[in-house]
Image (tube, rainbow, N blue to C red):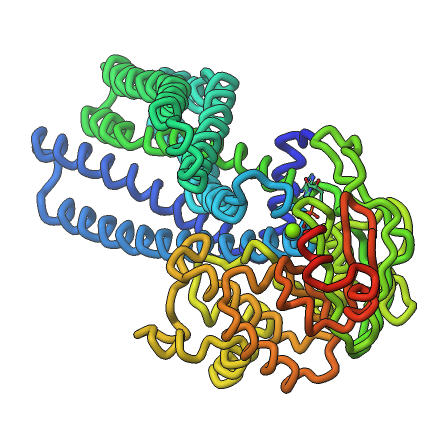
Amino acid sequence: MNPSIRSLIAWLTSITRPVHKPLFVSALLRIINLSLDIVLFGLAGGGVMALVTSSGSVGPLLGWLVLVSLLKAFAYYLEQFSGHYVAFKALELLRTYVFAKLWPKAPGIITHARSGDILASLTRDVDRIEVFYAHTFAPLVAAYVVSPLAVIIAGITCGADLVWGAALALALSLFVVPVIGTRDALAATRSTLERRRDLAHHVTDSVFGKAEVVGYGRQELRLAEMEEVGEQISATSARARRVVAVRRGANVVLLAATCLTIVLAGAGHSPVVVAALAAGALRLYEGPRGVEDAVGYLDHSFASARRLWEISHAPELVSDGPDTYTGRAPAVSFHNVSYAYRTEGGERAGFALDSVSIEAPAGAHTVIVGPSGSGKSTTIQLLARYDDPDEGTITLDGVPVNRFTLDSLRTSVAIVSQKNQLLASSIADNLRLARPEATDEELMEALALAGMTKDIGAMPEGLATHVGMGANRLSGGQAQRVCLARALLMDPAVLVLDEFTANLNSELEQEIRANIAAAFPSVTIIEVTHRLDSVRGADRIVMLDRGRVVAEGTPADIEAGSGSLSAFFHENV
Ligand code: ADP
Ligand code: MG
């Protein structure tokens, strides 16, 4: 998985096709702007020489200068306008593409990614590629068109002997300088970006694991490690900056050489022409300077493009089925389901589920209990096809779940997961992920069902309240109830609750259960729990241990087998 630069560009341009026309317009405007720039300087240089040698007059010269300046200002304005239009539009296209690509894989990626900062790093990568559209294409095109054309026109109109030195210097600047240290700069940039990501991981791990860090007295060690990564970052980024400095220096030397050769070759020519050419040459290197900057941005853009390409082209864990699921309150069955997580290398770790069979009757409340690590979360994630089992089948009313489109399946099977997954945005935004067209009233209704009415009432900004990174501005219980409200907004056929009572007091829990029973009387509920209270009201109990079903039945069955529910619970969970 290592695309060539050419295939990366082909891939990017296929995404951003709609901005190509405005992009060409902005390149054209840049060409006009750069040309007028050279003309303006030439005019000023030649004009002043004409005044000095008293072969011209001030009036017309000033007139021309004003006219060209105004035209240039206008072209500059239009160039900036179109350039920014292109950049923002490209940003929108890239974001939409990447998130659309990521969306079907998200559960898998989020459960497998380290530290879960994938959204943040994706956004940064997209921003870096946007720079490609904003600051590279137009400057590159303009540089390779305007500067050579200016030299050729000067050669034709004023004499080739005047510009041969300029032509040589310009050729070096356009074709040799940009490739100085290319490979080194790209490698340095790539490793800088990687080390920065390591640093971000290190910091998030320290923050989220602060209890462990402090508990084991590792503060000094973590700080020292962080410092070391920081030093590596400044060392590698210095390598990239050195290349930039060398290129800049080379261009300044070539600029000086250009002006010098024009003046030296100017002996037999009119001083006005020589002055005009030498002055114009001062702006000849605006093109190459744009190339210098652009090449610097390109390193970053390509390193980021490569990462996005890899994510977008990562194999899908699961593929769409042909049918749209439209059922209501189905019976859910697992038939001899076995599943092993893959390691990074792709081998199977030990079995997380070993020939698990579960019947969750239609419209009933089935509870899965078992010690930590027994496979409860894995079971329910397979139901929503975060991945497919290695063996066995999972069905809704007898139809295997892989017959359905992922979209219809995942909007019908709503999981309120153990780790709440809220985006760093407002409560309303998070809820509308489930139903984008929902009105504020509908959002409030869903929140009311989830027992959040009082909490929302106490927030000055109400629905617009920002939940913060990792929902850190909400309490654990609030975050979980927002997730529940989001699931309820989908009007699910199957509601799956993973340890959803962990952060709730039992009074609130009772209230929410009553709300759900009233508003969704027939929904099939599958609940994973550690709480005895939650088991009592269930229609069916399934007990997992080390990936196997070890007991199953109605609460009455279980009681008959173990003497009492609480004896069963205390022995096993
Ligand atoms: P539970 O929800 O009952 O606590 P899980 O279903 O989360 O249990 O985990 C079952 C087993 O699978 C455990 O041994 C756990 O370590 C392993 N496991 C869970 N998630 C992953 C993962 N993303 N990658 C590898 N192994 C995992
Ligand atoms: Mg779990």
